[in-house]
Image (cartoon, rainbow, N blue to C red):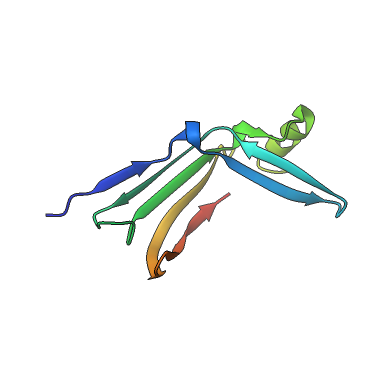
Length: 108
């Protein structure tokens, strides 16, 4: 019987950031402050691991409150109706050496 190993993202030493071009003249930088993720595998490494990740949409922070409110609104993420962005892996394969291919379902 295989032993399953579970790794958990340490939110104190991790971050989720993004950059978006705005009107081709500026870049908006932001982050999500609340998120969680795990990887579970019964292999010695990550090969075949099940990876899950979730972001709390309400935790978006672009350092501008009015813009954050707009991004949380129904015009963008609709955080009230869809409070999380999630990723669930369907495949995680070693492509050779330290190169891996992660495939899964992203729900925004």
